[in-house]
Image (cartoon, rainbow, N blue to C red; front, top):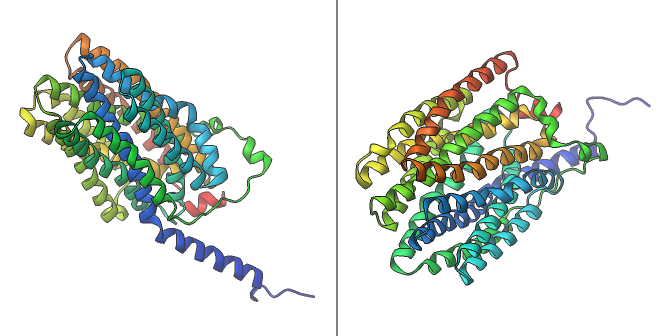
Length: 419
């Protein structure tokens, strides 16, 4: 009996229709996916501001602020690769549930007992919670794109999550500290994980295909054999450290100049608003953007702003500087995530995202402590000057990545999936 290749296979048609229906339901739930990320990231953002200002208010030095900020990245370093495997194996809901539980417990500890050690424990848990959930959310978002322009658009919306939470959470936390108490700001952080889980439940369950034993056994480290991925991760680490330098310097400089908690929150918020604006622009003009050119332009602008930030006058000057820096650094994540999904195999996106999380958080652990020591030994703006110098050197791996991609252009999502 011969088979007509033009005839339709009922089982194949049924599978195709089921896949299309599942994909359509997933895309309709995209706003809930973004809301899930916003609420959990806002928990971390409000805790960062409340913890930093609490230790300064208690008379501790800048190095203590740096130590607390570093703790947000300690747990992600330990959990990043495991989080990537969890995302590849289970999809969205299980990792997000783990992250919500960790964040809720950490926030409740800081709310119930305010002390250096309890707040440090809270920073540790909340940082780990966000890393576990964020890898799964980023992987799930990548499933909603079919080509590079859609990847940039999708990941611009994903990047808007942290930008929106950074725009709102520090301001709200600062107002609560000024007009109610530090305990009220920590209470806000405890409420947000509960909202996060309510949002996550609105996203349809979309479990990945079962992995073979050989697929589960492959370590994430062998992805680093790809030169393009290595260069991309290096650039991401440098730019993430610039973000941390800004987060460290603003509260320290603001406190030294006698600014209120609300003013410091507004300066931090201006950075986040600018990051939000540039990510909305990427959503609108994604088809006309070259990822690597946009990345190198962002590096150049960030270098200039970091070098001159310390001399900006008053709250208004700091807001302008933070906004320019937000425009530069806010454009980085959509470009990096888009390229990362195009240079790694489809079934290993979770592992690649875990590697990225490990690399960026490794820098985040070391940098704030180093920033604190550097600021204590010299001037508050020294961390920004350091990162401006590092960004100049980072143009070298950016050129190397450009040459590599000239020989091996970025593949489409579908091509990577077939590969």
